[in-house]
Amino acid sequence: MNKKEVLEIRKQFTPENCAITRICGCYVDHEKEKKAELKKAFLSLPEEEAFKYFDIFKHTLSGTLGKNLMNMEFPLEQELSGGTQEFLLRLRDSKLEDDLLIEEFYDKIIENYIYAENYYIILIHAVYDVPGKASDGMEMFDASDTVYEHILCSICPVNLTKAGLTYNAETNNIEDRIRDWIVEAPVKGFLFPAFQDRASDVHNILYYTKKPEDIQPELIANVLGSTIPLTAGDQKATFQAIISDTLGEECNYEVVRNIHDNLNEMLEEAKEAPEPLELSKPDVKRLLTRSGVPEAKLESFDEEFEEIVGEKKTLLAANIASVKTFQIETPDVIVKVNPERSDLVETREIDGRRCLVIAIDDHLEVNGIEIQK
Image 1 (cartoon, rainbow, N blue to C red):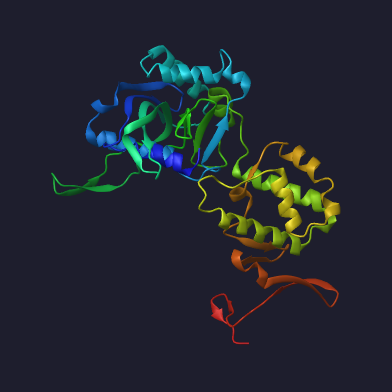
Image 2: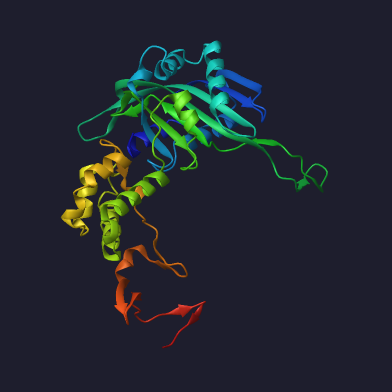
């Protein structure tokens, strides 16, 4: 799914556009026991309660694609009878009215979700009548092309509010605040099937994680059955390993700086594109060539890439680029540079020693004190 497709589904979580038919929920305590369950038509919820659920669902489809939102594909074996895809399809097609199926789903989550505190599993079924589009791109709400039937799951921590004092308007006193258990914003979730090309794609699923480096592999493998993706941090470490292994002893400052500059230039050029910029093996090879990596050093690149990443896998440019930082480290010194001005720093040999040289224009401060000379 791309940004536009995610946004189109997010827009359904409003009273005007609501396509949710049914909601189910299960409150699980820190001992993995089911303490309370909810099963009802979504439109029967009180208005204020429905608004709070809308916020949770919007959060489940928020963040950066490739970091918080991950497009994941089902392996072929999971699309066969008894696979996770078939189970999720049965869950969707039941419209969440099969109690045994819902309990089985909760049990799968509880068994595989690693969390030591209380949490709330929310599952909804929705039917979105996808409006057609005219030749000028305008939506035609009276001319539906297709129906997108889907389920969305959100997993939310449930925490006790902090102790404190509060003002009681009835008694006109400052009193000890009553501590409540609050359902917080989701930390995990998924949308199935994926919404691609404005239609259902049962071969893919969109997975949400609040923390990009905490993806819960057991949950992905055993509940969703999808291929476990590389996290943003893993992709960056993988890219760094490819650079180090490819260049070897010739991994010099100028080449690394060129790679940084060229990557950020590519991201800038692609920032308006709906799809995140993905780099395949040939793309990365072209990037290295453009950045000054000698042809002789690229002889083993294909083998290195396939071994570390995979022959047909890609890396997201946003995950491997350092858009916000350009940092140079020695054992005793750390230099942080505006990532757009990496040209101000270069390496030189001075008096037989390898040195960093930083160009200074008209302003220099040390610990907040402006230096005059």
